[in-house]
Image (cartoon, rainbow, N blue to C red; front, side):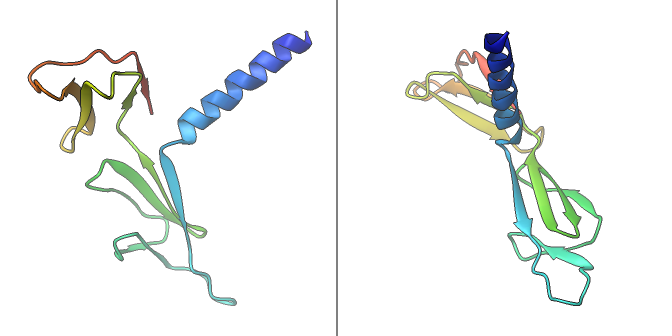
Length: 115
């Protein structure tokens, strides 16, 4: 029974790591006694409190009282031959393709994608 619980904990920890691996937070600059009405992103653009937007790099972002949270919306290829192949992000469709470095017309096998 302990082995089963240990295995479940390991699977859950791995799942949480994979799910959270493509998100980041920009903490709000809080001034004591004042409440935030906007957030400033990494490009210096301000966003209204409780607003949501998508970036040109396929991230979904939101502005809250604690700051900005952004998460990648494109599935990321992992488990492919990174020496022979490279990944290319299509910013219009927010999807990756994996192709051979020497022959970009040829696709590479990917055995796992993470979000």
